[in-house]
Length: 396
Image 1 (cartoon, rainbow, N blue to C red):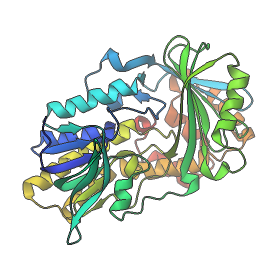
Image 2 (image 1 turned 180 degrees about the vertical axis):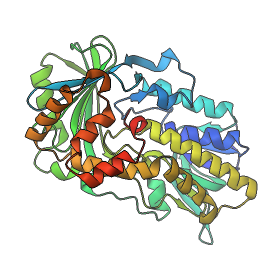
Image 3 (image 1 turned 90 degrees about the vertical axis):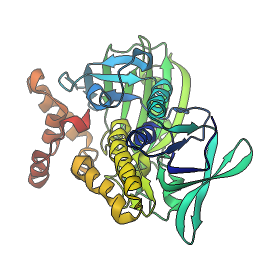
Image 4 (image 1 turned 60 degrees about the horizontal axis):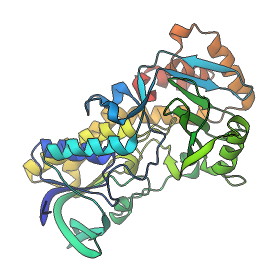
């Protein structure tokens, strides 16, 4: 396939947020190029790979090819070993992200988007101060593609945002530093995602165990960046694995940062939008961003297509994306962020007591929203904010 010299929209990054953005822009009439710097979408995998059925179903037909395991139960364990199991949060999956991301990108291409891989975006092209395209490196050559809108879907590091002059920084306490191993030859609970809390286990964060098969799981940790000065996440994860899975074999290792802010103040400027991790559209408590990124991508793609129809690419026009995102999820993200600041700062005795309280609740009534309401019940103002939001789906 020949890449054209000019597109209406160039999306940089072929992760879930980028592919869904491209799909909805193309579906609604825009010419779209997806630019991916790796050899294929979905690599390297830098994700625990957990999603809810409800979250992904609107965007792709469920295919067992990219489902590693089904999840029905969430198990949370306190520092003292007491745990609570939750059965009422809907069906979930642990994905094979490489296959899943490729499938999402294929959907975008079926709707008319073009894709180029091994294309590393180097900078934005500007004329008279206006963004008019993207400079990139492809097979050793420096090339340029013109466009009316650039959409940065290039992850947590988002060079696109910085090139556009957008302040993409987040504070250390809103950035988790993370490590994950894929372990084999371990005993795990079937269809159960496990979460371990405690300041000796994961200060300001948690350890997760997401099963991928009968004896294989993604086992990772995220800890608050401001608490990682003395020991980094690898120290805590290695300690956890030595105690819990001493005979495990590590088959895959990944390091990375996870934004846990409520979002960026600015995600739109003239001729540019940011989406997904690049816009910090991540659940502030769980650090999960697949579903949030796809929801944002739908909104972003539709707004981009409408701008193309109107031939208006200024910030005022593109701000419809910000407005619709805030209405759909953005405002709730602020409440979840406030809850994160409360929940992740609980002391070990408070975590222990929280699990004890949750175990006194009938299993059929124990849900993630109920858990967090219990965690913040001594903060009346925050309880009221939680009560006014519909947060159930956001925590799955």
